[in-house]
Image 1 (cartoon, helix red, strand yellow):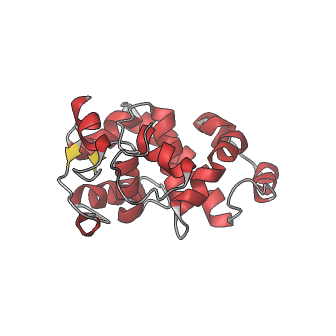
Image 2 (tube, rainbow, N blue to C red):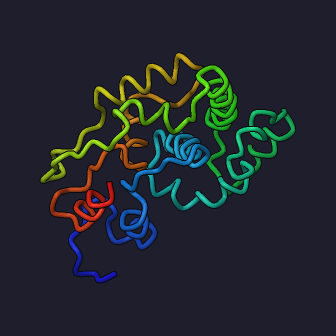
Length: 194
């Protein structure tokens, strides 16, 4: 892609960040396992910059068995300690424990509701992306009524590291919200694919 393209300002000049912005951020995701992975990764980001997680993302996929919820839900103390010793991920007890609990909560939710994780999550935005009209950095939101509702319900169902700010970042990442600036080349590209 040409460097002459107008982008959102947040990816800076980091090629990993730019690639993520240009190819993934804001693109609607409907795959259950990928949604679970992205929710866990957004939770792992709490208190850190997203680029930190982005650079470790492949390590997370390997360490957590490709975010297979069936496998993750059965992780024992030995596996937990293995994860704590893995320098390729953020070695935080609460966050690792949260990933395991979230896999367990994910399985319970699917069993209790009888619906896909995708349908459940997309229900918070009425099944289609919210298209915001952001002109400057100052227009970005940290939370929304939808992210607050998602956070509250996820917590009620046993999920961790799913506060309203994390849920909003997740919603932006998986295309539930189009928060590319209107001047960004991706704003219209993504909108055209709805």
